[in-house]
View 1 (tube, rainbow, N blue to C red):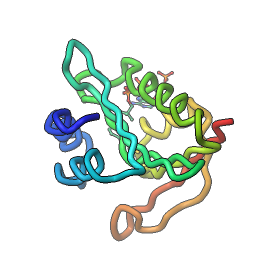
View 2 (view 1 turned 120 degrees about the vertical axis):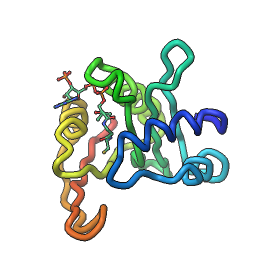
View 3 (view 1 turned 90 degrees about the vertical axis):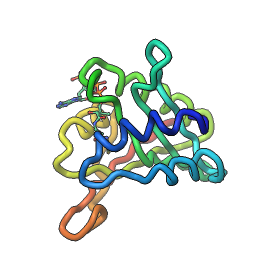
View 4 (view 1 turned 180 degrees about the horizontal axis):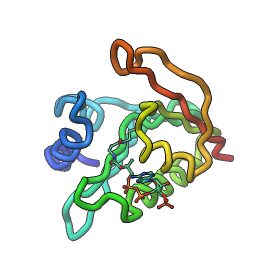
Length: 140
Ligand SMILES: CC(C)(COP(=O)(O)OP(=O)(O)OC[C@H]1O[C@@H](n2cnc3c(N)ncnc32)[C@H](O)[C@@H]1OP(=O)(O)O)[C@@H](O)C(=O)NCCC(=O)NCCS
């Protein structure tokens, strides 16, 4: 992901997370200023159809955000994107983790497909009464 991808990414983000999306400035900050950030877009016919962000600190990778455009969900693009990013992280990282809403069946299914297991709950992570499950996978 580069600076000029951010408006298209933000359009997907707003629809993917209606309960509370990141701001567009948060994406610009990640792409332009965060030295730990590794962000990727997936394109189809030159259109951004998905994105995934990750922080890498020493040998730990943490997925910060991922979404696929609602127009092309369920077609394998999320799996392709995650597989690519896991292979990228595997070059330097031992493990990868992320947080997911307990009720997000599609995302949990995607992560389970790639071997992520449950590592605990972060209470009120998304706001009062909205817990996150922590999931993680060993990369090598
Ligand atoms: C989660 C998300 C990225 C998946 O992307 P996708 O391109 O639709 O996923 P894929 O078609 O590659 O499916 C990969 C796997 O995810 C799981 N999955 C995807 N959609 C699912 C659904 N509706 N119900 C249950 N499992 C689902 C399945 O395990 C699937 O593997 P399978 O096809 O072998 O069964 C997409 O649903 C999305 O953008 N959701 C909104 C944003 C979001 O919730 N992000 C995650 C935040 S933690």
